[in-house]
Structures are given as structure tokens and as C-alpha cells.
Amino acid sequence: MSSITEWNQLLRRAVAAFIEWRFRKRSASLALIGLGVSILVAALGGLAVRFRSGDTEFEFGGGASFALSAVGLAVGAALVGLGTWLLLQDRREEREARERKRVLVVEQRGLQRRFSTALREALPRALVGQIVEKVIDVTPYFRDGVLAEQAAAFMHVRDARAVLRQGLGDAQPADVTVVYGGVSPVPLTFLAGTFFDDESRVVVMDWDRTAEGWRTLDGVDDGDRLSEPDLSSVSDGTDEVSIAISVSYEVDVEAARRLDPSRPMLALRMGKVFVGNHWSEDKQCAMAETFVRTLSQLANRGVRTVHLFLAAPNSVVFRLGRCIDIRNMPTVQVYQHERSDPIVFPWSIMMPCHGAPEPAYCPTLPCEVTAAP
Image (cartoon, rainbow, N blue to C red; front, side, top):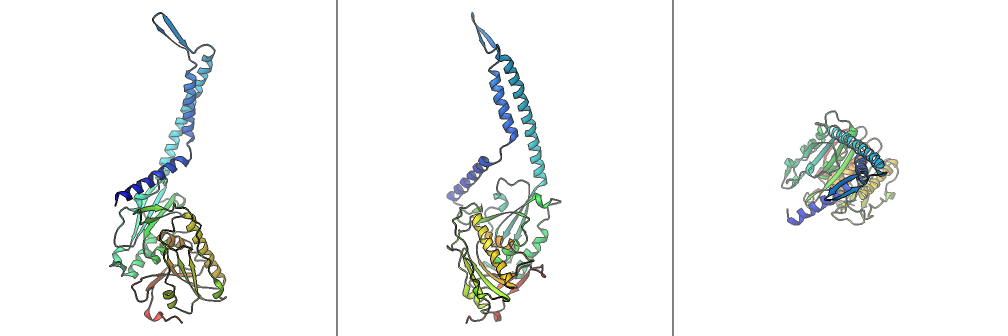
């Protein structure tokens, strides 16, 4: 890692620590202690102090102010004592909260190389609780940068859902915060997103390739949004629809269309498609809102299956996976893009849906690919 990168990470952490200190909730106990000390200092000025230097005697305070100073000393001492007691209570409650709460760190690995820093080492300082780390690692299934054993990788991720709560003990859902981050093939990342419903408190992080480190979604919202889909080609009763969503790269729409030219194709894209345009939490929430609205509109027209082609950063893919409502939305089948493969989209995963709660791995057969009309 270069010295410039190290300084960038150090500066980001320093800024985050300052913001946390500046805007965190002030402690009532510390405020009482501070007020009590101020009163004590003021009260000491009213006490009578005498001392002699040679034949000269000096006297400070005393007189009518002595009684007021005595009251001040009593009040100040009482406030310091009360503040100290509250401070000890606060520390005890914080300790109990740390023992009760859990931070489930889920890192999804899908590359041959490992990151220089584990996700658990880059957690936001504000998170409180015992850290439980779960790594979903499919790197053993890669060969020369390509996922060669897709079915085995799919089963590994599918089975991870059952073990994510291992180590959490009897922790209640309200006491668990999930921190997710990783880099993995799009269908596997989307599938991991379906593991966490809206009731889970999830903090999403992503790998910043420029800074070579984990980063929270702390970027500025530039107002760029996904385009709205043109639904004119989707008539009532249409069974299957394809959706291409371009965020960081342009989806190869023509290759996606060749899988089944008879399906209507809806193209959603950011106004500016480029790598690194996803670091705003508000911006990602807006993407998810457009995605959910599109699926809802298609469900209202009777669409039963959506074939989804995504070109987006890992955190965006994960977020869209969390949006799936298997009770009311169409079944979503998410495809993997492989530029060097003759089929281009050689496999996909059918996400859990109403009537089929288990996901399914779906290889794309060569006979399924046809020439576009």
C-alpha cells in the first residue's frame, strides 16, 4: 500500500472520529460534574483565608460571603457526587450493552486474492457489541479469475444463511447489527441480500479500489438517479420480462436480449454510468426505490418472472437483493456476465419466491441463445 493511500485512510478515520465526538449525544453525568466543579471553584472564593508575612497580615474572603460559599460548596459537592454516580451507572449500562449486543460482520469474498484489510478491522467506531465474524468465501471455486464451479459456489452461499446466526447465542434481533461488505459475482451477492429483510439493521460497506480500503456509504448525493422504465412494451398478462440496470458499467443489452428475444426488455440506467458513482446512501436508497417501484408495476400487470441483468457495485447489488418481497413481487432471476464466454450470460440464480422459498442455480444452455430478430 502506498504512503498516499495510508495517509488517505488515516485522514478519513480522523475525520470520522472528530464527527463522532462533535455530534454524539452529550453525557448528563459529565455535565453535572462540570457544573459541580464550577460551583465549587466559585464557592472557594468566598472562604476566609488569612496569612501573615512579617508584620503584615493578609485576609481574603470572609464576612457575609462565607455562608453563601459554604452553601455553594455543599451544592457543588452534591452535584459532583451525583454526576459521578450517574457516570458509573452509564459505564455499567454500556458494559452490559456490549455484552448483550452483537455486531454480525458478514464479509463475502469472491475473488482469488484477499483484501489487505479484513472487514472486521474497518468497522465504524459507533458500533457497540461483541463482534461475530462470518466469511462467505467462494474463492476456492475460481480458476484463472473466472468462477469455474458455479453450482458449488451457489450451494456454499445458499447454505451460509443457516449458519449466519451461529455464534450470536440467544441475542435478540433488536440487539444485532449486521455489517455487510464484499466483492462477489452479482447473482451470489444478490442472493446474500435476500438473507436480510427490512427488520434487520444493516450497515453496508464497500471496497474502495482507489483508497484500497473499506468504506461506508459516506459520499455526497449528486442527485443522479436511475431512469424510469418504459412500460409501454409490457401488456397486461405478459408472463416474463427482462430488466437491464446499468450503474457502474453498461449492460450488454443485445447479449441479454438474445437469451429470449420474445421477452420485453426494460433498460434502466444512471444518468452518468461510471465506476465510483455509488458512495451516497441516499443515492442508493433512490436506486432501490426505483427498482421496487418497477417490480411492483410489473406485478400489477401480471408479470410472473423478471430476468435481471445488473452492472452495479457490490453494495448496490446487495441492497437490491434486500428489496425482494417474495410474497408480492415477481420471481427474480439474476444473471452473471462473463465477457469471454460465448453465451455472455452463462448462468443465473432464481431467487426465493412465493411457492419456492429455496433459490435455484440455473445454467444457461447454448440452445437457449438465439439470434435477435
